[in-house]
Length: 396
Length: 229
Image (cartoon, helix red, strand yellow):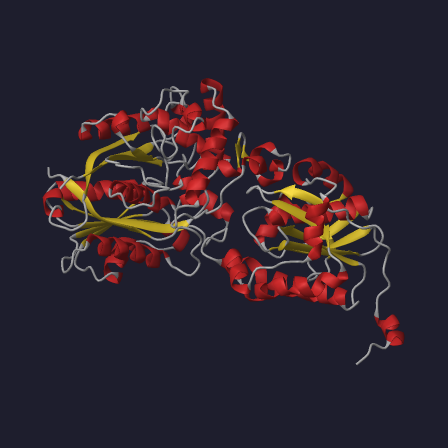
């Protein structure tokens, strides 16, 4: 197996992109990554597109075939990868394995989703199609509903409080104001969403005990990376970023079938595998992008990947340990909470953000100084299909 | 041409006496303080400058809401509507939202429009709630008739309160009205109607001194830009 590097990264601003089709967004992000890679006359051998909902939301299938034609990348191999909200991470994995195997040299991985052309209700319903078709979906479960129940259990078992969740909301939306690609560029005020009696309207209950600002927005967006063997990457101008570790694990589809519904086993296993492959420990990571579709998930994942002991993640966030300059900065992009969550794009966008961190390209107010190792966690279903990547800056 | 006041007396609808709406402040999610106050008729030309750029925004039905609101406010300014009022939301003097309505009779209110110029802060929710507060608590009406012209409005009013469907045609488009009866309002009030009174003098003076408004491009960007929420 060959070492695989990321040599190009690009994304478009997330938000509500009424003027763009899904294909437009995928193409724009791809072109940015191709330009960033500086491949010159070389083309890519294969394209993997992470997308969850084109069939349902755009009534469009085979989008990878459409994209290679749109980008004039013919006759590159092309596939669409669908794995719920982990579609982006799965597309990265497919690209990684294709290059590592020696079959392809240059691979474009792009993730994208266009969710804002339907109403919020339909978008919520679309995401809920990942739930169990007999045991959950017919009873009206939604992902926010599931997250609400998970939060309640987590609060009871580990003492997480609304103060802890608030720390995530405030941090991530503040970081979103510093990220030009973020969907939500509005800093929140503690008084306005928590202390003031007016907060009951500003930040109403969405899925008890989660409130409006505990949830990520519904977004349009796309992100892309270019992969190639590390040895070839060393000949290019930009510092390559090695995919040093990768792990994927699954769990039962329904939460109630798990021995302990608060135990996100797939997160733990995926991260462990990624750390083992990279020969690193959680303490070696300098910056992380975790899948905070709901504020509770940033706390729970920070514990399950090993940054903090169970029950300590919320306290760590409140103490500022996950902020820039803290013990382990998390979601300096704003995370799903502020950067947005176009589901098929998210897993790729997380990797793009860590690439920017490891290339030391970000402005000071978002850049972790001397960052060498980064982690991403892309969380599919409600933790039933999780991908983790450990990325490492390559010293040339 | 000078107004013919004799003819005006015929053309102008008679007005019900209307109690004033006492101003209040609301702390928004971003920590900014919004002053909610009643507009005076003389404020209309300034308000219309903020409404005008919204006429050309198709997103989320801003065009129809703005066009109708523009006409309603102009009708009020020109004395061609019965017992209309307008409430404003201002932050640092800047106009961030507008609501209006009128008294159909002494007991029934007719809700007109809600226009949020700054988005993502639930300004529309706050101002709609202030409008209902005015009808029920200050005008002493028993019910308000409401329709929504956008899915967002439907979610905010019909579902969040929730309102009761009637078969009474609404003044806006003739469709079936939804009713906010006093008991529905009082039940919803603890979770939807907020605000502090009295308003600190300096804040009220700032709001009343000048209705500031952003330039047209800024307004369009806030409402229909990429980050529109």
